[in-house]
Amino acid sequence: MQENPLLQKDPYERSVARFWAKYFEDKNSSIAELFVTTGENRDKAAKDCLEMLRTIEEHGGLGEKKFFGGDEIGLADLVLGFLAQWFGVIEEVVAVKIMEPQQFPRLQAWIKNFKEVPIIKENLLMRTCYPCSNGEGSR
Image 1 (tube, one colour):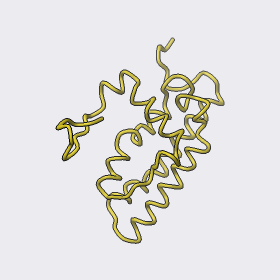
Image 2: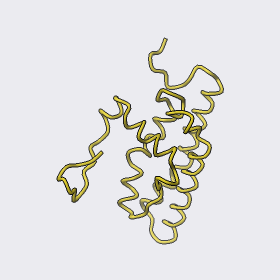
Image 3: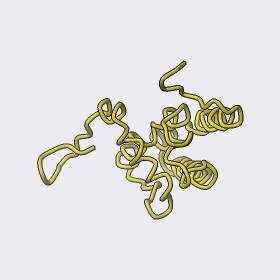
């Protein structure tokens, strides 16, 4: 018996987790495009990122659940974990704000929950901001 399975026992729930993992795999190129393009191409990438995030926000099942798979972290959470740590960094670097908290309350709650999972929290890279008003980095 697995102590911390990545996929749920229920076949439908397993298929949902696989769907979101595949969806993000197929759509995450827009995040890379946002980072490496300029002008109209960056605008298109920002629009594509916004569409991807809206789809996850509206149809990802978050809100009634703490994580994509329920009360425990699973496959979809790990695949989408990139959003929790790095999406904000990319927004800062390219000076384009896409994931506004008021537009994505479920995703914002998920990010908070995800970052509080002990094993995730212990292994996240410390983000250093320049300049920080308190002289410390932030997570």
